Image (cartoon, rainbow, N blue to C red):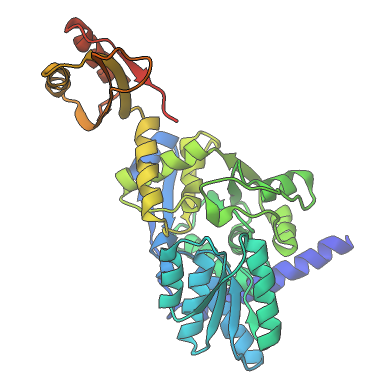
Length: 415
């Protein structure tokens, strides 16, 4: 009972802060759309609405918590500098929020952070220090700097004021969809879902809140199931924004009390969700931002006849990664395939093959030749063709046509 009362006290305190943060943030941030997806609704059997935080300033929800934390703290004491550790969205959120309030910021980022993210953070006015290979090493360095500079450390998730800022999303969801039944939220350290859960459980206690994590980075999901903090030593996922080793103790307690369940999705689920959002919803989501849609498309939750809000938490995805994800998604959907065959190495042979494929409406992407493999006869060439097709039936028809012309090809399994 003592633990419950203590937890309830924290929840009530954060709820009061969420309401204050709502007023503070109103002129600062975008009230992002809650957009209905007819295609997702048809596929899932529910009524699916996307909360598009990828359209938020700095490209993710992080600016909410960062701004409110800095604003509230500056009311209590003079802040010389804001300090944070992050490799992405939190870095940009703190840099932007600090600059709006006229306060310098120092962001420590891992040495391998992509140049685009470093430049974006600098572009919002921060001094960036590259240190360490892992986030933990960057975090330790940031704490050293914060102590030396007597600055304000802005934690990415394990802070009641940061949680309160993120919780304003919950109020916006409720105001736009009063009859919301289910909310799906990406989870890393747990700040976002903690704030949303507090707000929505206060406004509509019957709402079901589900956290989504990648199978390769399940720290909060494991902690939730085992009712204790669990560390994942080597998280491995394309959703780097949620690839944490260990959740925060504050967020863990809130999630344990207010979140209904935690779901895990595969890397292929994430890839398919990102491709779906791009192609069908015209929505650019980073891997972590697509986790809720991944859970729906992967059939991990029955939402039949439910009003469902899915938080698209961010859209800051590296372009080279996005290109690879699109190609991988097309392969998973059976719309891009590779076929391989051995042809006589003489003029006109490849032309005949390509003519068959062109007549069959295949879109050729690449053609690779191999004439030097030891297993090939000197008068033979191995040809690998990557092409875009309609579906598996289409490629089988194409291969039958090639066979009729005397060309034997086989499928090449994707890596």
